[in-house]
Amino acid sequence: MGFYRDHVVPRIVNAACGMKSGNPLRQRVCAGLEGEVIEIGFGSGLNVPFYPATVERVAAIEPADLGWKLAAKRVAASPVPIERAGLDGQKLPFGDDSFDAAVSTWTLCTIPDAAAALSEVRRVLRPGGTLHFVEHGLAPDAGVARWQHRLEPMQKRIAGGCHLTRGIADLITNAGFTITEVDVFYEDGAPKFLAADTLGVATA
Image (cartoon, rainbow, N blue to C red; front, side):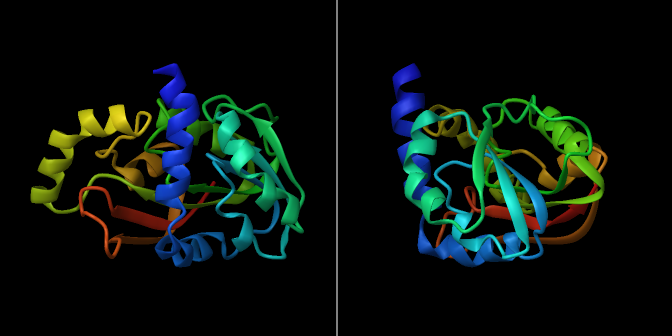
């Protein structure tokens, strides 16, 4: 599983998350980012083209070496300085109150302890700092949710530990954030069990 996780999963994620249909959602999530930003689950840098000019620098948290390699061209072309600053969203290598904002796009599904990662993000955000997010998780419809529970074991094996049934809004609020904007919807053109998204902004 080590080879598959390290050399195959990053390519699957790059392809699946790199579809053009996701670009408007990335643009919505990145809107309003400013100052010093931390991105957890940086992956292959698919958010980089959508960082607004108000972002001063980005600390990228990404465990996969191949993911960072796939991001190289986007990082090199970015007018915003980007540094790979850590490997584990559950244990961030920064002091308290270090960042103005954080961004997470389709990341919380795969972090083993999403609650710990969100607690860490809140710790490193300055008071009033914002978390901008779009995540797929537990569907609002009972029928879809039942299929998610059935398919989750297979999904976790195929997609590097990706969970289908995490309640995103609850995870964020339980970590101490206040959600100030939220939109729950199914992505167009994708199976509902994979595409029950929660997009919004939360304040630390």
